[in-house]
Length: 550
Image 1 (tube, rainbow, N blue to C red):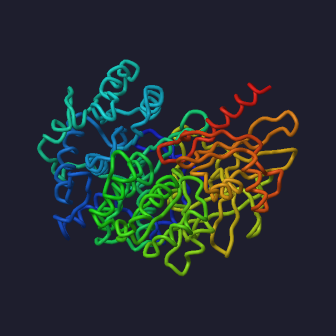
Image 2 (image 1 turned 90 degrees about the vertical axis):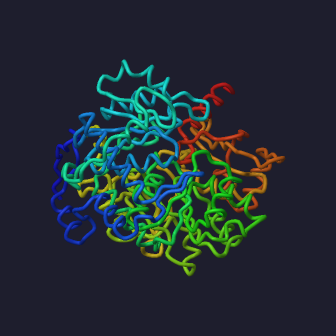
């Protein structure tokens, strides 16, 4: 299969295959439309339909459309042209959806940046993607973003404007949407194959890499998810995941227009407020990483009526214990709980399960592989395809796959000749078209020449009554090369030590060479914005502990 590099209007180099493009277009997986077309159609059908809820803020289709046209006029007045990058480092506020739609109207590339990032990450990302404008809060969670940006401006010559949202500043949100609305006839024609988003990976190893998505790839996954999960105008989706993360962005910016659902945003997560949001808004769909579900389960199990409106909960983004899904299903039988799998590069590579008859598969697997998404298992050493049931490296391809990284050199070694992307995960295919993730390729612990999957041990330890959360990484060992080091968040008022871990795992029938040989009790674990544990940080900490102990 032939692959070429195309120069996008933004100047980004994107990967392109005429063969695959022809297939995806002819089969209808890609459409020659953008979100603006979906928004225009939805607006005509019901302009007063609620689009977003955030605290006391409400945004209807008409309000979002009108504000987006004004913001589009502002972008044009600042000399921005198709392909220019605009960044936003904002919490889960309704303004982000206006920015996203206005950018689509004008052919700009959006660059969402997590609010937890500070000077180092922010300066790198803005320079790397050549951002022309950024939206920031003034003060949020005691951090002064406006002051941070003021300190960075001299090092960012391509950054023209900083717009402050919900605060004062040289340019404010009120100024930006104070323009006369742009005439639709004055808006540029937007190529759906052009880059629409550059989102940086969480940077669990080295500098974060900019992931390039086009209108084609992003729109496809939004449509596929909604169709698989039967999302419609009667759905209210609670989305605590950051809108600066791939999942939060999809549900806040695209799903609402394409499928008619409303999304409820939350800028600062607490489990009690989260339950109140679900109850007060009668939310029907929820999703998030393991910590969200665990906290929800711990708190809401005493008052299940509070989340009785939920019909679907998808869980992913990090290690998900099968028993956590099973326990949630037993506690809240009216809701379908399941695991799904994907990444910033390959959004929702699997689509979970479809109904209660598949509940066991929702707990025991990481979801169904649904065409046109293609997932294969290959030998991690020589790339030989492996039969179903055998563990190997996961590679993926499909119309929702990203179009390469900002720096083409980062693509090297990450794709095979047929365009399959190396996901970096290990797994196996079961039941014909379901996948089970068994661990990260780089997380494998090699003890005395034997490979140990941390996930297998983590899933067992998760069932210990004293364990709230656990992450296991490799620790250097003078005798075995590497050994397992378990970082554990104990449940409130409880503790656990190495002898108890050994006793418990022995009772579970786990081979003793897989037992962790060091344990560290912690109050929290280092995480990326999606909730995924940063195991690279834990590996560094484990190495320091080993060096200190000699």
